[in-house]
Length: 261
Image 1 (tube, rainbow, N blue to C red):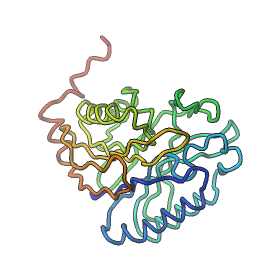
Image 2: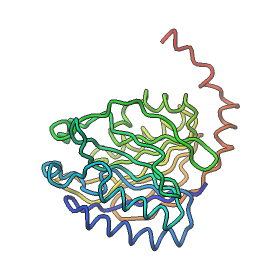
Image 3: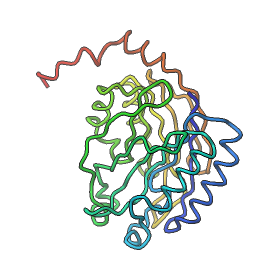
């Protein structure tokens, strides 16, 4: 399965401009590489313009969702659409949506863990539903968002549901770039699955983003890593037989004794 990540320089506070940039990137890079799955970063429509979200976040079923449906159908590709701020009856959530090649929404996840260091809890409400898996190509996948990376229980939950690849979408701060790399590698090894992590570059409100979008194999081998500072298209091929081989060779998921933990 070929995956294509857009390590994007998000323009904070400008959903229209960001949609235009994604549309241009899709037209050029998806046509060039013919991927099975495209991945965007966290909060790619608004960036971390949290103080503006009340004005620029969309209602459910808004213009960006229509845009993503059209892009999936036009390019005949699955889109793991990073995440975006969405207004709900309970408040604004940080939501990831996944569309299949027909433009059908096949998965939704609202970020559970909000970042106190970036004041997310002042502007967003956390998700209330357990993350689940969804079909992708011949495998099963999950998606988690940025700060979720620090909570291994979420990743283990997806692995126990059969996830063979977990997509992580972020606007991870450069100040903690080493944590991004170390934790992603650990999540791949301990859950014996691919980790595909799409981050942003650039800065906003004196926060630099770490870049380094990457893919780790189930064995913890680095397949590809992007620049820490530049916009970039990140391409990787995933062979899901590696997941089954590793899980058979080192059966730590089936050797768990949770009653003693």
